[in-house]
Image (cartoon, rainbow, N blue to C red; front, side):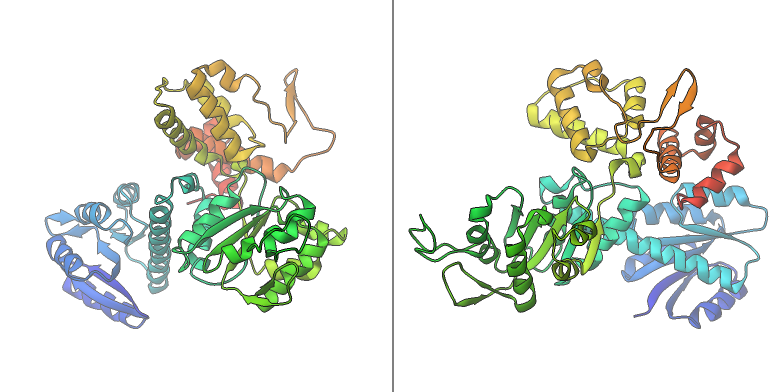
Length: 451
């Protein structure tokens, strides 16, 4: 399907030339010669996905059009063309929400690349809005938010695969929100009207696990006084979430593999197969590849589950999201307990930003809940220590931990935290790291942290 672009250019010759260039590509082109006519077209054509506008439009500029778009159609892509040497206009437009800019004169390929980039940004914003709107329907999903690049990629992945029937394996450290991601997959899927069954495979006594999962007929085991449907049957028409899948006993792994292959379940004590219409989402914080090598997990089941992998980022990998999460959890817990607490001091905020968060988002939420209840800043931060990176400054000298460390990961965290503390201002962030500005930009590009 062709993407629809709105071209806004008041020079007739330039407008016609751009129409010819863009019409040769898989785009549907609408054209306007002023801010007013552009707004009229935006109101009439709801399928417009991107606006490409010259900066100077008669007595007005593209800024007025951009402000209208960001206020009324925030997902639209927007690219500005500025005259040579008018870099200040380009900066102004980017700060106001434009996706990209081109300095005149520009080449055909530069134009097409800018439009392609802006269309991708528009698609991501739209998917993110849909996901966020869906998550807001259930309060427990609100925590799955973030502006860090890794979270935006996660949102895009969830949005892309949720309408499918594919089996999903979610991995990540404890406390990163694996169940939230599973609920989002269900909520955004055609199965959202059906049940969502969450089961911790490590919390079921082994002697009861088979009956709990697959069901049992009356008399199948001691105490089975009546027939019982298992969790898989209970999830009929919906989604079943198998948390800590690595804890599932080997004999039940074989039964789960058959269920995934055949789409049927057989109750304990019965020979009758029951057809299922369910989606299986599994999760683990363990390394399943290592578990396969050690014989604790079936290799064939691993590949059957790992059709679409989703990795939940650790909180230290998205340090720029910490201020947003702090605001969210403070608001959430204050509403829950009907208590008000003063704003956190800058010193405490810096300590929270610098902490490694081995317990991830769950640990952050728990600490802030305690703060709301007790109102004690000192208790909030009194034992904050980076448990994962035990590198410390001793006597002013850096000390490498005995077990070594992942230097690239540490460098990336320093860059992310500096950006977060400087609220995105790269000049301030570079100063926080006592680093030349150009060297700072180079390292941002190295880790793909440039927006």
